[in-house]
Amino acid sequence: MIKGLKQLRAAFGASFLWLVCLIYFTQGFRSFAWTAVSYQLKDILKLSPSASQFVFSVAFFPWSIKPLYGIVSDCIPIGGRKRVPYLILATILSFVPWLILGLNAYLRNSTWHLTIFLTVQNLGSAMADVVIDAMIAEAVRFEKASFAGDLQSMSWSAMAFGGICGSLFGGYALTNVEIATIFLLFTVLPAVQLLSCGLVKENPPRTYDEKDRSNGKHMMNGNTSLIDEDSFTVKKQSKSTSRRKKSRKSGKKMDVASDKSRPFQGGDPVFLKWLRSLKNAIYGLYQAFQQPVIWRPMAWFFLAHVTVPNLSTVMFYYQTDFLKLEASFLGTSRVVGWVGLMIGTFIYNRFFKTMNLRKILLFAHVGLALLTTLDMILVSRINVSFGISDKVMVLSGSALADAINQLKFMPFLILSGQLCPPGIEGTLFALFMSINNLGSTLGSFVGAGLASFLNIHSGFFDNLLLGIAIQVVCIFVPVALLFLIPKDATGISA
Image (tube, rainbow, N blue to C red):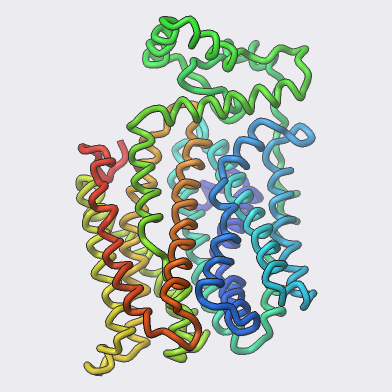
């Protein structure tokens, strides 16, 4: 392990590795502050479960538009640089809201003000996530490609470690310090991240005339797009050649494609270059999603979230108000969840990655349905009749839920990588992730609506069992839509 870290340091530099680990650790450690947000909404603002879930859904919406950040940073440099300035901006957006909420009680205790600041904070976190992923992709290009797996493993390990620490310390902090203090304590990480941005040097993008002289042609055919030539290298391949020949059959299409892919001229105004880059990026995404092999599986993963109401916030209220579980214990349950996530990753790589993708997703949803029945047992108090404590039920449910959800998420990651056409991998992959996040957000809205319809609120959980039963039925809806997944696709990357 130490030898591997030394190799990564020699390849990428200590400052870059530090920044990657810090950002991913911060992403995981966010549970430290967001656990406090849950209690702020429930105990201080006295919001109902459906209202709290609505606030979370709105606040996390910026994660659903991640491609926008990638396209803007790719196409519009700031001061001649495309990554570090946007990373600084993202860090400021992550830092300032927590600082203001920690210092100003009025804004912290106002539902709408709190929602706005939490949304801005998520905007910064999502933007930082996109930018650091782009920096990693650029860092491992060409001769450093052999380190791609090691760098990704290191970043995911940092995030998992951050999640475990955030969950442990978050539960402990809630029982010993004020919520405002927790918000202020969390600002330490974004502050360190802001200072660390100055440690990483970024080479300014070369002019297009220079690229022409060094790399030759830099045009792309009508089926892909020129998003960023500092991030992607266009290779002449027989597939792209055949696509160009095919596109020439239609004069109208050729006019559109040639306009989209026309190289920038040295005398073009900067604004015109930015505008054309944005048009190229949007056109490439439009072309990609015209292919059924891309939009059909993405539609399935989107619908798999939307059709299943998310009742996680309702269950949080039930566990704290009715079961009287302490914040420290709930923090421990989240740690168990992170462990379950890692176990799910191991199980997938060991047993499922060669299995047919439809079967994997079928097993995952059947497992989720069975697991959700544990919540029904908990709410109906059947576990007490058999002498099983509520804490055992919550811990086991948390671990199994994250493990099974990871079995479902891993195929999504791999299939997304397989579907991305050459030239727009980064932006299209970010779009796939955003579709998944948007589906999750809408699923939370559906869950909030269901809780409101059933009149489930703090102190009244009589209809919660019915709500969970509806959730179990809805889990099988995506199973009927598995025909959208490619029939021969497996869980291993091609």
